[in-house]
Image (cartoon, rainbow, N blue to C red; front, top):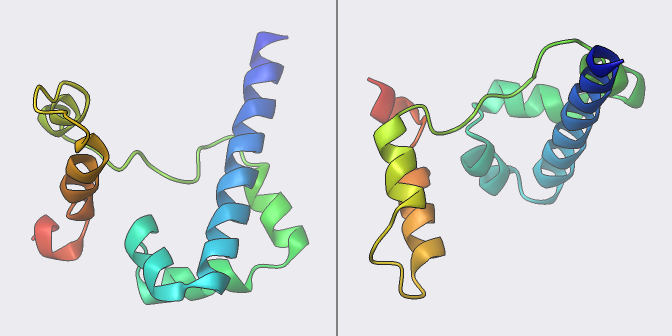
Amino acid sequence: MLADDLLTELRDINLSYLLFAQRLLHADPELARFRLKLDEEMASLIASLNSRQIHELASTNQLLFRFNVEDSEALKQLVDNPRNQGLGSLHTSLLLSGVGTKKNDD
């Protein structure tokens, strides 16, 4: 039963992500592309998915999105910030703003 529970949770995560991404893309496409690290074509495709397509995608047995922080040092900086004096969320936003962008991946 554990495997079934995990697959159900995975489906729920995928569905939540797709619905959130679609809602954000409809509300503010530029902000959504920045926050979700999507190119224009992928953003347009996700925004245009209908309910059936979203549920089919969500039901795959693979996670549809990836963790934004791929470097363990960057993650350590986010969680072990000794300078956190009320500026933690700002520091986190600044560090994550460049993660996964084409400019930084070159």
